[in-house]
Every structure is written in structure tokens, then in C-alpha cells.
Image 1 (spheres, rainbow, N blue to C red):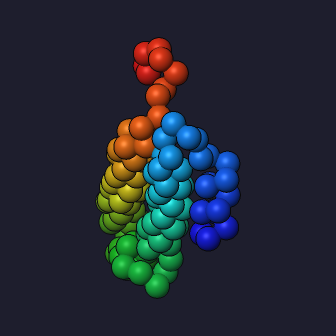
Image 2: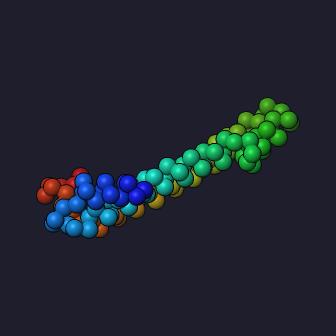
Image 3: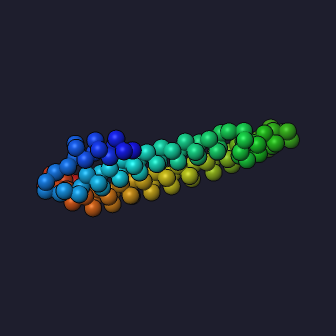
Length: 110
């Protein structure tokens, strides 16, 4: 992160917005944090050491139907975490980008 901080300062510093590079650095840190969070969530829902996989495995002992139901339930549940992580990081990066104070080229953003 220290090297990333220096590279961001050197490459993204502009005199018209002297502190914009800090906001852009924090956007990158949010991206790195989201990657770690997504890896952790994926590991939780796919590793045998944690409850979701063990629940599917125990449901497999009672028959095909309960296995399918348990698998679908875990699959649906596992989408909430990544969705929240991505939404929060997008909102945070957008807020930091707005706080940077850089113009977006003068035309409409959308």
C-alpha cells in the first residue's frame, strides 16, 4: 500500500485539485478491500470448514430432495454478501470521486 500511495501521488497529482490524489488512492484501497472481502465470502460458502457446506453435506444424507433444497438455499443466501460489498464499494468510490473535486470533462456524465 505504501508503494501504491507513492505511485498515486506521483501520477495523479494535479495543481487544480491538490488533494484529489488522496481520494483516488482511497478508491483503490476500497477496491483492494472489496477483493479481500469477496475472497473471504467465497471461502465461507465453499470451504468444508464452514457451516454452509457442512449443512449441504448433512442434507445429502437424507435424500436427493433435501440436498437440492439445501443447495438452492445456500446458493441464494451466498449472493447477498458479494452484492452488499460491491454496492458499498461502488457508493464509496463514487463519493470519493465526487470529493476529489475534479471536473468530468465539461459534458454530461451520463
